[in-house]
Image 1 (tube, rainbow, N blue to C red):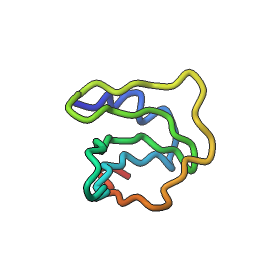
Image 2 (cartoon, one colour):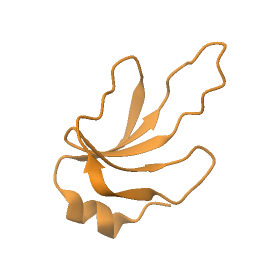
Image 3 (cartoon, rainbow, N blue to C red):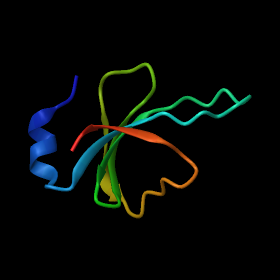
Length: 73
């Protein structure tokens, strides 16, 4: 499911986060995020298994107002 070779190359601060946010009445899907420190490196869309890696990490990934379960540290 996860490409562990790429994960190991990205750094010691890499985390895989499964979003568990309850969006209430809204039907917003929760995705899985690959975060290195505060940078979003990749994500897996809800219902898919293959991660999408960004060419350049997105800096300052904001987790405020959302909940996550750590799948891998």
